Length: 337
Ligand SMILES: NC(=O)c1ccc[n+]([C@@H]2O[C@H](COP(=O)([O-])OP(=O)(O)OC[C@H]3O[C@@H](n4cnc5c(N)ncnc54)[C@H](O)[C@@H]3O)[C@@H](O)[C@H]2O)c1
Image 1 (tube, rainbow, N blue to C red):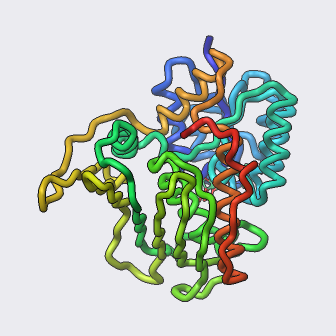
Image 2: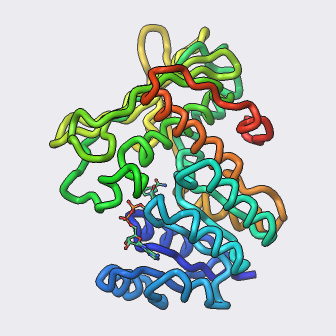
């Protein structure tokens, strides 16, 4: 069967999603929904598809079977729930929603409509991350004692949309954009749920109404700990994006966005060869496989809800100065460990 795909929002990742649709044999791009005329026309022209001015028109198109939602965070819930109600399978960008209750609403809508929902936590599909997880699972590092996750980059103030500069209404800021990637990859690589957090999330660098810097200490159910260090410089600066994992037997560094992985050998880190498919293609293929086999998507709405709960717990810890515990029911039934 060929599934018609509609993309909602000509986001920064929409070209990548169009490329994935072309790669996955069972999918065909039908339409884009985008209110911004120039972006809509450019995308529709480049990818030879229909251009709708809003998501409701796209959801009414009977040729659309799957929607890929790449909208500002604060629009995820409304549009994902409407997509489920219209009977479309949903590929939803991360973070899943602004609150845990909103995640619940999306999950209920998908369940009631009998559609599949994938939350696009891209880190599960990047080749170096996949290789790292396989090595950890195979016991290559021995017992994982702790990990550090570091992502330094520019904030890119000049090109950020207005919602990104407003945490309260838009869900903006580096934490809810990139901190969620870091929490997601740490818990997925370590293979254990985060049970408690202590964090500081603030805006000392750029001074907007959204954060630019976040530090966190994370406890995991299996006894591992991790620290997370993220910042967006107000100007250009040295960039770094890597996870280091310290095991009792061996050590590992992985730069998932650069397709690079190193394993310790004596006193040295030795780079390992990395190969694999495009992450956007793997994500979409995973959703199609779930539809065709009636299985759970590789990253489902319960996982998306768990990451939202942990990201929000870090913000709560930052406000209160207290350790925040993640309620066990949030991670009790996740399939990914
Ligand atoms: N998985 C990843 O690695 C990754 C990378 C980048 C962005 N994202 C996610 O993608 C989402 C979008 O982020 P962005 O930075 O590209 O945002 P953006 O603001 O640059 O793009 C969003 C687009 O949606 C359009 N839009 C707004 N309301 C709409 C509506 N009702 N219907 C259709 N289109 C509408 C906007 O005009 C804009 O073009 C975010 O949730 C973000 O976290 C994920």
